[in-house]
Image (tube, rainbow, N blue to C red; front, side):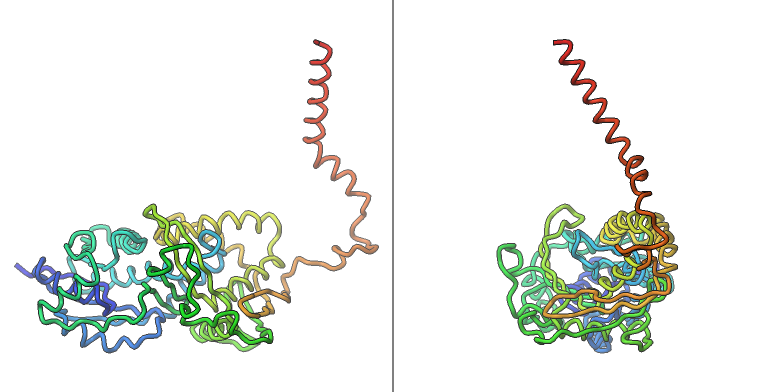
Length: 408
C-alpha cells in the first residue's frame, strides 16, 4: 500500500518543526509542507532547507500577499467590519486564504490529510478547519495540539533534541505574535494580566505616540467603488499602497489598539494589535461613505458590518451568508468613489476633508440661510405626522388616567 501523504501548514517555527517528526512517528507518512507568504516581512526561502532537514519530503512556498489584500482585506474593509469595536481582523482574514491554498495543494499532491499547528484553545483551529470543510469536505484533518503529549515550549525543544533534530532559534521576545502585511499582534506574557499597561518596548511596527513627530502629517487616499487606489494622487498597486500607508501610520504612532476580546471558543483573551495602514484606510473609507451613502443604506450597513465581523472572526469566510453579505456590500460601494484627506498626529487618525463626484451633501440644501429648495414651514406637517404615534399614546394615557380618577 502507498504511504499516507499529509500536507502540513508550515511556518518554520518550533511547533511545526516538531510536528514533522511527530507525524512521521505516529502516521508513518510522506509529508509535504506549505508555507504562506502573506506579507509577514520574513525571508521564507530558508524554510526549504529547514523543512527538509526536519524530515519533510517536499515544501511549497506560496506568495499570497496581493491575493490577501484584494480578495480578503478589501472585502472586509468595504464592509466596514470591525470585531468588538476595535479589532481590524488581521489574523482572521489571513487564515481562510492560507487554508484555501492548503486545500488546493493537497488536491494537487493527492494528499490524504491536512495538518495544522493551531492550538486547541484558539480561534485559528476553527478558521483553518471550517475552510477545509467548505472546500474539501472529505479531507482528513490532523491537529496535533489536540492529541499529543507535548504541553509546553520546553517539551517541544526536548522532543527535537532527543531526536538530534535542529531546534529553531528561540525568540527573544516572550509574546505570541502573528504578522502579515495588514497587522502585527501580540499576546501572552505580561499582557495576560489586563491591569498591566503594555510596555513601551512592546510595539515593533508603530512608534509610541509620545515618540511620534510633534507636527501633524496629512495624507490623501483615493477610492474607486470602495477600493483604495491612490495615495496623495499617485496610483499604486495594492501591495505598494498598503506598505506606503503602513510606513506613514507607523511613523505617527497610528494604529495601536489594546483590547480584551471574546474568543470563539468561549474564553476572553487580551491582545495588542498594530494596524497602521489599515487604521488609515478604515477612517478614510468611513468618511467617504458618510458623504456618498444615503441614510437608510448607511444605517442598515452598520448592522451588516457587525455581522460580517463576527463571520470573519469565527472563520466562516466561505459560508453562503458571507458571500451574500459581500454581494450586498459591493452594491453599496458603487458610489463610494472619491478622495479623503486624513490627519495623523501622535496616535490620532482623523479625516479632515472629503470630496466625491457622488457626494449627497448639498450646501444649498443644508444651509441655515434662505434657500429655494426647502420650505421650513413644511417641517411642521412632517413633525405632526412623524410624532403622531407619540401624541396618540399620550392622549390615550391621559384618557385612561381620567377614567381611573372618575372610577375612584
